[in-house]
Image (cartoon, rainbow over all chains, first blue to last red; front, side):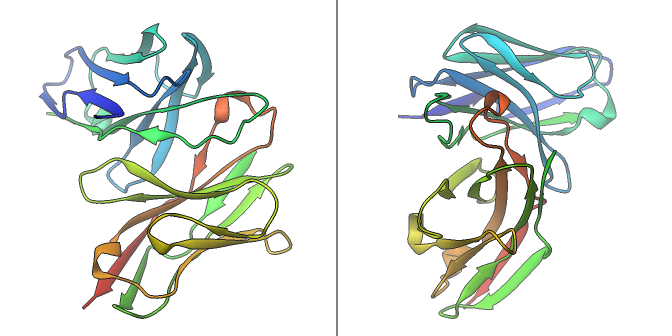
Length: 116
Length: 116
């Protein structure tokens, strides 16, 4: 069974378009994340939701809007796509317990976004 | 603020030889440290973590890491490397208990190439 899944795996689109990436986890975790990995493999967190509440919101253009309909899902919508948005986007999840705050994150397979 | 440095972009090692991937960190407070591995076109997989206790941590696939507080380092080691260990390795740090949302800061990654 896939623990953290993302769709689509590949996304090729034109500049200016709007697109969404979906993420689902079946681990029963209460926290989900979006990361961006650029062409140099540098990995940076974008957003995190805990029990559907936004708890991490890094310096990301407001063209990026995460949405968490429930604890098991976290989607990423991107408006007016730009060339610089081309990257691999990873979803992750973990159990964020404040009494046990060191639980590792589990990552999805990634979505490779190419903006032409 | 927290940061992680992986000083080597690439490490080359012959199969059967010891493998070391270096990581140093900077964090205000007690660090929680993690190592992840990324195989080509895959998501990150958790290898091991240091939270507290014994400075030598053992993880998956025969990997271990040693926490050195005085040198602020958390180097990843494997006594005998395999060709299948060839991958991209990431060190990550998060701040202690009350850090918001399990925010991980990743190093830039080190590519490991194990030659037969």
